[in-house]
Image (cartoon, rainbow, N blue to C red; front, side, top):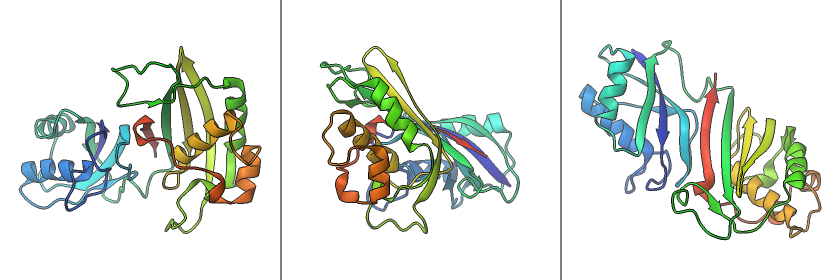
Length: 243
């Protein structure tokens, strides 16, 4: 029987979602918990492969189990076998052909930036301590320029294996609470490192430190060398997946 769970995790101590032979990952820890309650090898599929240090509040994972589980019982059984920094928020049966990645039609990510000169010890695992003020009005204008369907190749890795770098961002907005700035991106899908690279570019544009003068110029150039390294992973969270 096929099941679908919603997973939240603090990615600080893990090498991303995807299973690796020599490092702890979210997938490997979850798979071990599933195999413990099922007694056999389990294959899991996530909606998105978060990178090392990236967090999630609404990651979706699908898998098959022989035993029939009530959703609440499955959630309890898994959380009883998972570390405290990985939690199953919801569990339920799914259609036999449901696949967490293939069926996803949209994702929302958040990225948090602390602009205070002093780090907040309670947020340090989840924010980029930038320590510079940002022009929020300009930042929102630049965010608006990212919306729509574009070739986002400038914001991904040079050796990306995807068939196309064209993606659609439906919404890009910011919220600020004091010196904490949270940026949200919702779209049909995102390239590897895309959100973190967009954040880095937006911040550098905001400070007038990029050769390109605008988001439109960056996108039209397709020149990855115009953008620096991605923003730190710890500020990024996969908030939800749409189906």
